[in-house]
Length: 323
Image (cartoon, rainbow, N blue to C red; front, side, top):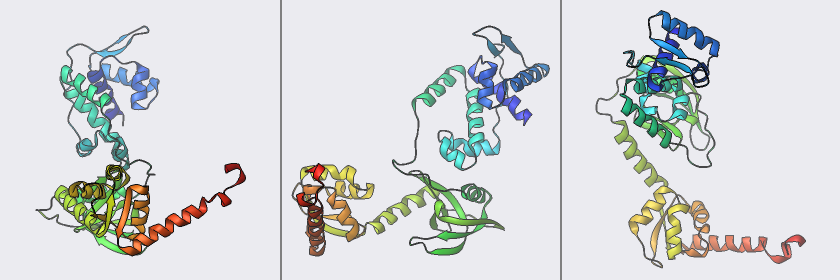
């Protein structure tokens, strides 16, 4: 809307000083001609804006002028905790509000603090997704977020592990962004947003438990989830190099368990794993720096895998160009 854009032009000039029409147009994603009209409208409303011509010219407020139009809308206030996270803000449909909230905050700061805030923004950047992970579908994220704010029950079609589809009605208590993946907590359970196949916000509301703390719930749930996932133990021993490599070759939970156990090189210890199949893949990463002691079935499976690999790389089977 024009009124909102006029306020943004005013706040940009207040927070950044002199700006050209092209700079303002680029910031607000409009044409320079639109900016010319906006400047005329602000001047007609009594805002003390003057223009300097020439290569270093631009629009500027008279020194000392400050507007009091720095109040935040509810949507902008909701977006404040995402001010440094443009990706998640966009997924939630709050990108525009987050940008406006940042601008209003900068405009409200004294000059010296405004400069400091700009330095921080230019020197620190938070990239939440993990390496080598493609984007997950989050088409229902904004609807879930609205249901969380408005405390409205949702009906959804959800794909569980193993591609099993279930129908659920859930009271959504909160949203969590973990390593670039969105989850929502509903009625004491946790759901992955990308596995929501269909979703409808119902007219029916719900009462959020007064003692429910999202951060505490997520912390406790995460610990229990990891403990369940890596519930099996196998007996292994590692060289010093293997113990060192475990901190970046394994999952965070596995690495943390090994740090807590603090085994010495050659000492047997309980290695956490999801299953025998996962253990084979995990331990082959270490080469000769890890040895399975028990169970014998896993030891034999690793030996068989190594022999099969040896057959693949046997000289007689290599192409002529590789010999």
